[in-house]
Image 1 (cartoon, rainbow, N blue to C red):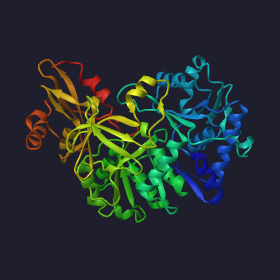
Image 2: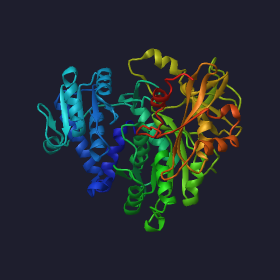
Image 3: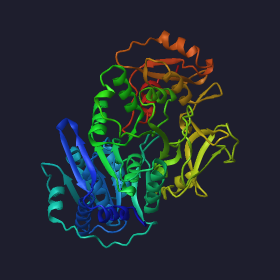
Amino acid sequence: MATIIDLLVRNAQKYPDDVALIELRPSKNFRQTITWKEFDDNANRIANYLLDRGIKKDDKVIHWMRNSIPWLVAYFGIIKTGAWAVPLNFRFNAADFKYCAEIAEARAMIFEDEFSKIVCEVRPALTTIKDYLYIGPNLPPNMESYEEVLKNSGNQPVNIKLTPQDECGLYFTSGTTGSPKPVLLTHRNMIFAARVEQAHHHQTRRDNFIILPPLYHTGAKMHWFGSLISGSKGTILTEFSPKNVLEAISKERGTIVWLLVPWVHDILVALDKGELKLRDYNLRSWRLMHIGAQPVPPALVMRWWDYFPNMQYDNNYGLSESTGPGPVHLGLDNDFIAGAVGKVGTGWQLKIVHTDDNRNIPPWMVGELCIKGDGVMKEYYKNPELTARTIEDGWLHTGDMARIDNDGYVFLVDRKKDIIIVGGENIYPIEVEDAIHNHPKVYDVAVIGIPDKRLGEIVAAVVDPKPGESLTLDEMNSFLETTLPRYKRPRLIIFDKVPRNPTGKIEKPKLRLKYGGNIM
């Protein structure tokens, strides 16, 4: 298969009447399905509409929607034209939207009614966008209706010649370490991601992947590519709750679920409190829970296995610059090694290097994780300097500090930018967070550095107790006295909510802004 589009076309030809996608909105008692042929036909309709409006190869089309069947239809419709899909984070505000649109120099836009106010507000400043395709009621002036396009546009296949080297996606990173960076991906990247996903999770036609994380992020969509390459179902569950997850698995015969750390917490809390009872659901089909997007506390996985002792488990590591997950994964057949992300993924290479001179360092020493493979992005769009610093001789410098053991298992230590230096000693927040997660009353935790006149920085922990639990400072300090050496213990413990973005990553810049202003 030369391009990611070829997989959709193949499925439409081989399995035309089989269900490709199911969309669930539990609060509205809504369930919708689409077959592989309907999926491909509707993508052709969107593509033909865009071509009729003058969209051509290498144009950019912004794509701003929440998870839904139309999200994936629009995505494939865009890339069938040879244009680049530019998916946007549904949490972006007007400034974020304008920033991304101006970098992309987008020629057209597909969006849904939730973002109408922002789009109409910013629209006069966006001189490059000529056409707007709108999903929802109350069509704004000088825009076209998505539903009308599906009714009136032809479903004939488009005749645009594409190669694996052609660009197809411009993704903006989550911005947890600064402004979102534009990552340019190719069809070669996408096909590679699909093959890696199937190699890791062994999807077959019998699988049904429950899709929860946002599709604008490479993680969720590239995991779904395992369904695309195997021709199996995907179920888009648009509203998270522990009950919604178990009901979707039970009713739709879900087999694979990718969960974020906060969602795992929520499911376990609901089970601990008796709000959910496993006997009320038919979960025999559920074979795999995989997790990623952020470091996973080992204590959380151990608690999961208390309830699901026979379930397959996989921890995935990846980033937008690697076309999502795959460079490192634990593997379905490996015993869980506490704290490990896993071993090198299928088709990938990895190494740990010294941050000063890029020389390889021996096992167990901490250095920067570098990865190499066909999933490495083409570039940071319009930023050759940053691209050159990030990709050297095909090796992507991830910015993540890690160590590797003698058996090849990788242990993430922290983001290079998140390391806390206390009196000349490097403190890795993940180690402190893992220790605090072991307290039975802790629901979530984030560790940051706060400026200190004498030490440079001190360790501060923002701790969110489990719902209904009372947790005191004395309890927390007494617990940490037995689990961490003195120099790693937080000097400041704050009881507060831990902010996370839609992909589950802790938003540490927000915490530094909130609590780091007063030098101790």
